Image (cartoon, rainbow over all chains, first blue to last red; front, side, top):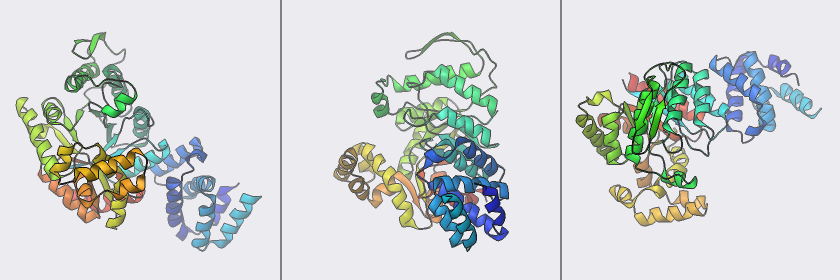
Length: 95
Length: 331
């Protein structure tokens, strides 16, 4: 899945809120074993650099959140009035 | 200025713990303590990762013990960490927990002597000395590192009983007091002072850390709910004299203990009373926590460590502490 493509569609005004929500899903998820260690290390590196709300940061967060909590992740796009992106992600997940 | 520490048990995957560690450093915490239990993930792997992902925070095992890990290996671990993060490493050393030691068939022999001898050996090894040591518990015959250690590592003693607290005052650079009620902390500090006096030191040469169970939330009910599991285990493990000191019904504590034995969490956590919460945790809204911390600082605490559970949602709780509690004490 091209996560970056979806991130580029996210309005800048929504990026910080979305970043926070995705971090919360990842940290509170019970599906820890689904997190690839390399992806986790990249997230930590971006967190250390304080760039989790940048396009690169959101790309790795989106990948992790979709692996750990796909339903919640798709739903949050709808909650934040990004229904079209939610639909595209849903389609990509089922294809 | 008062230091603020934070404790994590490496029970969760490293990336979750490290997210919180980075967050804590950004939020103004000065100290990080990682617990050392054989049934969690390894403390030194967690600390190594913390060394890599942080720049300022001081960190160390909080606490290890000399029975599960021979002092020469503890010395090796902290000396190596001190190469990764020079000047940021401390060591927390205690006697260990008897129940855990029993689980792995290790005898808790002469705890005061063991802790003192272990610290002696570790200090000598980390100073680069060749250590020929004939103690009552530990013996070495010319132990020496084949690398040059980077210097002094402050040693904290995890202590609860009066003799261990006095020993901590006498020989350590800091003491970790696993208590939060002013009555308990006042008593503990007086024991530490006794040791400090015996060693001819000044009290402010010892960093006295209060290391309680902590839970913060804007909604006091949510803060309490998060603290219930930890407090129930503390109550179940407390001797009757401690319970009575806080006016806690020993029978109620026994009921909690029985419920925990059969994993009846509802009955165990439901049995926790407000007196138990107050005696064994710092818990509530940010303002309530500030009030309690301020009270403890007046008694001689120089570092306040927030221990598990920290809050219902750890990330939110760290933010609350950083934004509402720490600034109060740094102003």
